[in-house]
Image (cartoon, rainbow, N blue to C red; front, side, top):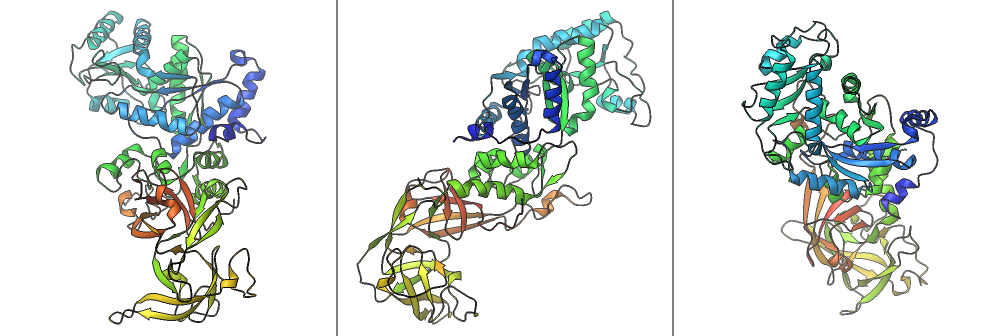
Amino acid sequence: MSAENQLHEKEERSLNFIEQIIEEDIANGKHGGRIHTRFPPEPNGYLHIGHAKAITVNFGIAQRFKGKFNLRFDDTNPVTEDVEYVDSIRADVRWLGAEWDNECYASDYFPQLYTFAVALIQKGLAYVDDSTKEEIEALKGNPIVPGQASPYRDRSVEENLDLFEQMKNGAFPDGAKVLRVKGDLSSPNMHMRDPIIYRIKHAHHHRTGDQWCIYPMYDFAHGQSDSIEGITHSLCSLEFIHHRPLYEWFIEQLEIFPSRQIEFARMNVAYLITSKRKLLKLVTEGHVTGWDDPRMPTISGMRRRGYPALGIINFCERAGVAKRDNTIEYGLLEFSIREILNQTATRAMAVLDPLKVVITNYPEGQVEQMELENNPEDPNAGNRMIPFSREIYIEQEDFMEDAPKKFFRLAPGAMVRLKGAYIIQCDAVQKDPATGQITELHCTYFPESRSGSDTSGLKAKGVLHWVSAAQAIEAEVRMYDKLFTDPEPTNHEDRDYLEFINPDSLKVIANAKLEPSLAEAKAGDSFQFLRMGYFCADQETVSGKPVFNLTVGLKDGYKP
C-alpha cells in the first residue's frame, strides 16, 4: 500500500482541536460545508521535518473532510528564491504522498495584490513612507512604549496613489520608499503598528522576470492569496499567532473572502534544527555535504538516509496537533522509522569489520547455497540463496580470545551457529607476530548441523551473521549519528549552535564485506543488515560499487 493510501486509511481516533473547529464550521454551514487547505512554502530552501508536519496536517485535514488541498509557493522575495527550490519542494511534497488539487504561486496574484493595495490607499488606509528602515524601527517603539506617527503618514490619497504608481514603474531605487498601512500605533502587537506591505526590490524573479520591481510583504501577500484561492482554513504554526489580527484586518478592510487562520504547535524535535538560516549556514560552511546530507533534517536528507515516507507521516501524526510548543523526543522519530522498515526492508548479511575464518575441515573449492528469508515479517517476500564456502568473514567483535562467561559468540573452544548455515567451533587463533593482532581464526564445522536439517544434536547459544570470502562484494558504508550532541543546540544564549556539532556524526567504513545479492542494489533500496541495523543504498551507488547509509539502528529503547 502506498504512503498516500496508508495516510488516508488511518484508524478512527479522537479529533484534534483543529478538526473540532472544522466540524463546528461544517455544522454551522460555513462556506457551505466546503473545506479547502493549503501548504504555502517559500521557495528559498529545502523542506524540513517541520514542513512535513505542516504537509501532514493540511493534506490530512483536506482528505479527512473530503476537501481540496493547494500547494502554493509564497514566492514574493526574488533575491532568495530559485527554481531549484520549487522543484525540490514539489518532489518532497509528492514523495510524502500529498497530491495537490491546485499548484499556485503568490506571484500569479501580483496584479490583484497591487489592486488591493491601491484600494487601501483610496480608503485612506495606506501611505507611501520615505523613512529609512532604521527610522521606521525607531518610530515603532516597543511593546510597552507606543509608536510615533511617521512624518509621511498624512500624505494625501492622490499623492500616495501617484507615488505608489511611480514605485511600481521603477522610478525609485531599492529602499527609497515603502508602502505602509495605517494600523494602531499604540497596539501592544507590534505587527499592527503601521506594517510595511510593499517594498522596492529591483531583482529578477524566477517566474515574473523583470515585470515587477515592487514586491508584497508576507503579511500582505499571504492572507490575500488565501482569500483569492478560497482557502477556508489557513493552518499555520504558532509563530504566526501574532500575525492573525493583521490577517483578519485585511480581510475586513478589503471585504474579501474570509479565510480563517488557525495556529498549531510547530514541530520541534530533539537534536534537530529547522531554521532555514541555520541550516543554510551548515551547508555553506561545509559542516555537511549539502541540503540532502543524510544528517540534515530536510526531507531530501531524510529520504537519502533511507527514512520511509510513511515513517515520517506516522511520526508527525504521533507527535499530534497541539496548541502549545513542545519538543518531541528523537526516539519517537527513530521508532516510527524502524517500525516501517521492519515490515518492508529486505534482510541481508554484511560484515562491517571483517575477521577471516577458515573452516579447516570444509572441502576446498566447494560452494554451497544456503537459503535465507528475505523478510520474516512479510510472508510474500520470498527467499534468497547465499553462497557458503571454506573461508568466510565474521565481525571482529564477534570473537573474543579471553571471553567472559556470558559471551555467547565465538571464542577458543566455543561453538556458534552461522546464520542459515552450520555450527562451527573455534580451534586456533592466528596472529600477526609483529603486532599481536588476530588476523585469522581456524575453525571446524559439523556437517550434520546444517540449518533446516540439523541432526547433530549440538546446541549453540550464539548465532552469527557472516559472508563467504570468495563471493563477498566490497562496499562503502557510512555510519550516521545525530548531527548535534545537545538536544536543543540553538537554546543556549552564551554558545553558538555550531559548537554542538557531533564530531562522530559520520564514520566511513571503506571496505565492508557484503553478501553478493547486494551488488545490484539501487539507490533508495532499504535493507536490514542482520544484527547491525537498517541501511539504504545511497544515490552515489553504481553497479558493482554500492554505497550504503545507516538509516537507524536495530536497538530501540523508546517506549511509545
